[in-house]
Length: 226
Image 1: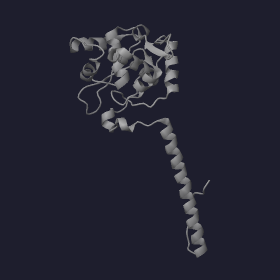
Image 2: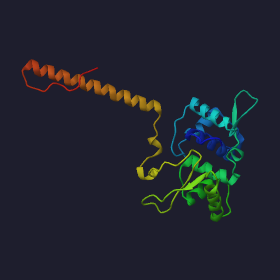
Image 3: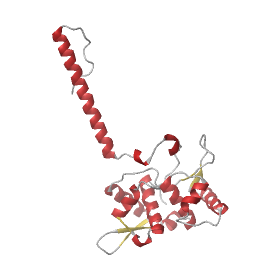
Image 4: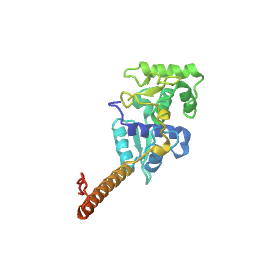
């Protein structure tokens, strides 16, 4: 890999590897299927609301690193991954990295349960050996995070997007799939807040004017409508 992946590039790559194993009849994936896989609300952390244009930009970035190829022929473009060669790790290691890319940091027990559909490890020591190999590579592809306060076990995280930002576990923050918010929703919320602020300023000005006309002492409004 020539550079670290963006979070959306990692999501796209992870979805392609996952869907090849879980729904091989629909692989390679069309753009619509890929966007749906990136935005699905189950088995994803964080939940995204990526647009077609954003996913296409991520595909272009992955194509530039030979991690994704576009299938030729047919009326609809389809995409397939080249993760094993592109990341230069064995298939069992790719399976673990995909779970970490799609679901966020995981304990060894969580990884064993989640990776089953992508690759079946003989036992827990076999899985841990692959994780250790990923951590010891140069550059390292995975890291064992310090155990979070109150957690029973430490969690593993991938390093394909660079150093891991140490944040509280999703469970401890009370976040859920329903907490996901799109850029458009955020813009709408800001616009509504600005509208309410203007309306409040206008009401304050009206109260001050009426009080002045009635001879009731009052402080002048601090906000004025724009």
